[in-house]
Length: 101
Image 1 (cartoon, rainbow, N blue to C red):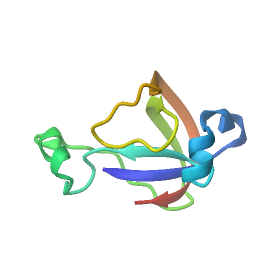
Image 2: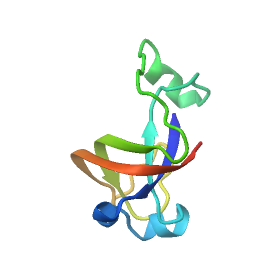
Image 3: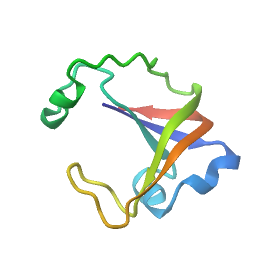
């Protein structure tokens, strides 16, 4: 799984909240799942027999993101679904890549 921090274009600034401000330097975090050799033990079986064809962007690329928009309040922990977790079906927007981890 690759985590990408995005500097949002101004028209998408409403997609972040105080947790993004406090923990992610005001950026939105998106993930590309099953993109690299998987080392996270609880993700190995989920990525088995799945090939992800998404191109991994570079820093400062201006990318389009499509997928579920999930948000909560505070940092999320794997294996936990806080009661404040919400999601929307599909979100499409373009933004600048700031960090890839």
